Amino acid sequence: MSGGSFTLSVTPEIGLLTERRRVRVIGAVPGSLVTLRSETLRGDELWAAQVTLVVDAAGSVDLDESAPVSGDFRVADAMGLFWAQRRETHNGGSSEPHDVTAPLVTRLRAWAEPGTGYLDVPGLGVVAPAGPEHAVEVRIEQHLLAAEVLRTEVRSDGLVGTLFRPAGEGPFPTLIVMNGSGGGINEARAALYAAEGIQALALGYFRVPGLSHFISRTPLEYFERALDYVTRELDPQGGAALVSGQSRGGELTLLLAARYPERIIGAVAFVPGAFVFGAQGAADPSDGWNGPTWTAAGDPLEHLWHDNSGVTWQPWDDAPAPTRHADVYVDGLHDRELARSARIPIERFSGPVACISGLDDRAWPSSYASRLALDTLARHGHTAERLHLDYVDAGHGITIPHLPSTEIARTHPVSGVHYSNGGTPQGNARASAESFAAVCAFVHRTAKARAAQHHFSQTSETKEN
Image (cartoon, rainbow, N blue to C red; front, side, top):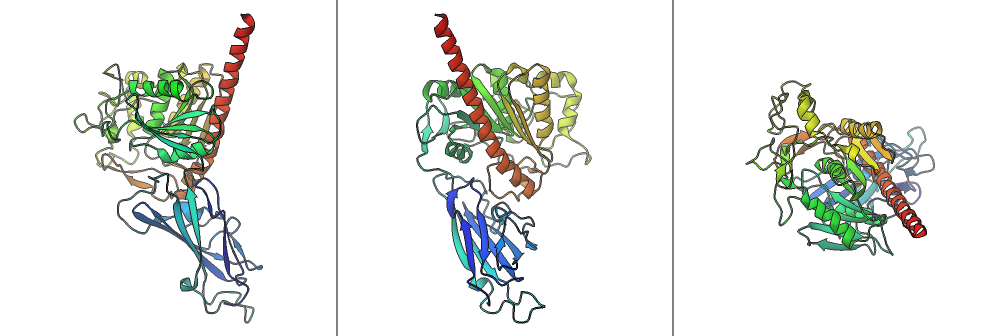
């Protein structure tokens, strides 16, 4: 090709998953087209994104300043090369990282498109060599486990989890991280929190070795032991833990805050529910979707699907809804007395609360649940911070930054039922990146304020004595 030295630049090439990358092509033919393709092996699956852009008059392209004219995304955002990736293989793997000790490796290639360039300027166009067979390449590493973060498996007090301790001296803000109805242990999110100076216990409560395969009849005493473990063993800043979970874990987060308000200093609920629900798609088949999810002292907690007089159908068996306007989460509220009994009494909690939701959540109404919970706190005179991050173009799939966000339609990992998370790929990606940074700041604020309050109380007591 004519022109300068065709070069692909990525900054940084090696860094944390949460870091944005700047991607530029320089030395290209002005007015020509260049194509960039990213390929990432995520577990057993190859994921890829490809876009084509116009080179500016200086012979360069900056993906944060120029929107593609063709390809998998059409906004000026270099991270689209990651969040807009789609499956190239179909082996059943997930886009979620499973081994936090291994970096995600992306092969990024760029090439000039033959025959392109200013057509009104003779001699200024792309000639051979060009095309994908003459691409330049950069290898990008996205790490989840930061240097000096200590990963330790926790198998005491009957708990199953993984602790991530930041580098340096504590005490650290400490967060218990819980998954939703897919179960398992969310090591990826916890590891990234630790990179931001937050001690994080990724806690499994079902679909982990030694515990039930189903969410049905999960005892709240398990989480009480986890709270005691953090306070006793981990020296949390502020004297106790914050709790955080997504989806069913978001429901659980609000439930724990309401049930153990003196043991928790803050709550961060991702796409939560504001009621106790039945086991739904993660149910033990012997109990069914309308069986209990949580128990206390061996007794099931009342939940919204328990003989609900307003519910005549359910969406967890792959059968179509009666009409396109049917919503079981709306129908469930028609049984007012049951809804009153199943509502999570979040007003019992006096600490800071953050809710993260998507207005286009198609799995359940997390925006409504967040507004209901935070409005209840306000009406009951709650004076601590109330933070609501409600994203217009996001759905249920608000996760950690810079993962592929293209799979809106999902198959539930427990029940196998098909459902939609909602949102758009760009909207979900934005919500995931922005909410992660905001939650880290929220956790630090909460723990610092509680530590200062604790110090003031101790100082006052000393002076009185």
